[in-house]
Image (tube, rainbow over all chains, first blue to last red; front, side, top):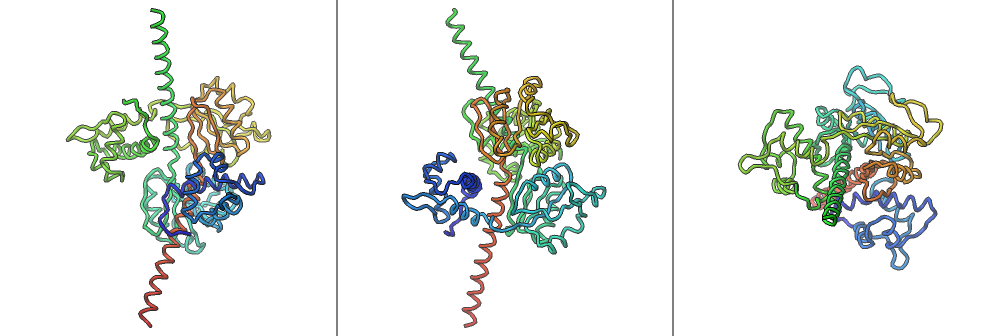
Length: 228
Length: 228
């Protein structure tokens, strides 16, 4: 595996490659050319070859890629050949949504503890999991060897929650709180702003509407001219 | 407003601008220079000016941006100055997670109907909302003037669900199903692959671990050399 810095764009494409390779495996496909893979996934064949060359390539000239081989390699690159232990912070609507979501994972990522700062929620159960006192977070993370902290707190608590998680020794933070947070360089950070995606959708819907209105206007204008 | 095609990168940055502007308004800040805004948001001042110039600019030389004015403009650009009516498809763990998530929205986007294909879930309630029969989807979308369909079905059902939503007349689709779907050009599509984000996090964690291991090796090597 090469050691040069891989761009985020490439890394963000790998999970997509993986999804398609898993589907191909399910369909019993054993090998695929970069051309066929390109038709399927919608990136150019040259893009695919370039992306995979970042990690030393895997294809064989005239044979293509082994579907299982490539999938295993991507799993190894992404670090999906191991288990991750997670804690979730925040038991409000957002926390409950994301906890529920983590239950759709078949394997690889497990929520081991769920923490909340609000006294009236601590000790209650949600989705069959007890909500724990945020005060016990640091010792829990240390004792349970937690890798990832998921932040689903409100805006105001998110940075403090991140600081505490990093102090306790997590290696990565998955942030859903609607605020940008900072972490030390030895901790990885991924941010999901679901509402940004919905706002982009609203933009595209309105953009299409405007274009359609403009086209309709042009059509009417043409008809007007013809009728004159 | 200019009519040239705006790149997706710009559009994806607008919700972020908006979030910061809302926070500034809450703090009572009335105006901000592109330099100050740059320090806050982490894009260069020149990037900010370029982005906003796509929509005709809004700043005044020597004054900066009006926080409320810019926020209102971005709301109008994104189409957030109106209400969107949504239906949600799928009442499994993913659907429940996303429904729960939509309850964190204060306004603008409302789930009006929740549909499921599995007979044993139809008629039950979840989160105080009745799960409706998928067979009634098309007439519901037409009658209730639904704008957006949220797809939280399993892989196998996602494309059929999208086809039905488009046929019924939605203007946008927000896809959470773990498969890529296709929609006609007059329908906007936004895709969220939450697991892709988690896989990228795993990659970055492992990347940091590898770098640390390498650094430790180099240090040991140096100590070895000194001891010889």
